[in-house]
Image (cartoon, rainbow, N blue to C red):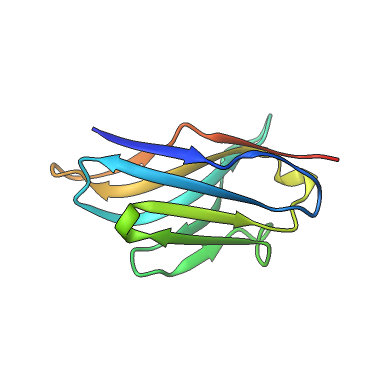
Length: 119
C-alpha cells in the first residue's frame, strides 16, 4: 500500500509565499517523476510543475519564475515553494508520483491541499 500525503496549504496574501510538501510512504522501491497539479473551481486539473528522478524540472508558464519544485529522494518527498502568489493561484493542489511498488510502475495521487490567495 502506497500513500501520498500533502501538507502546507492554507491562506496567503497576494505577494506572499507558501511551501507545499508531499511525502510518499509504503511499499516503494523506486520513484520516477514527481509532479504537482492544481484544480481551481470550475476548471480542469492542470500540471503546475514536475521533477524527474534526475532532477530535471519543468513548469507551467503561469508559474515560471515564481514556483520552485524540488525533491528529497531520501525522504521520498517532493516540495513546491510558491512565491509571489496571486489570487489566480487559488486551487486545490495535488501531488502525483510515478513509482515502482514491487509489482510494477504506477501513478499515485495525494488527497489534495487547499491553497487560497486572498487579501
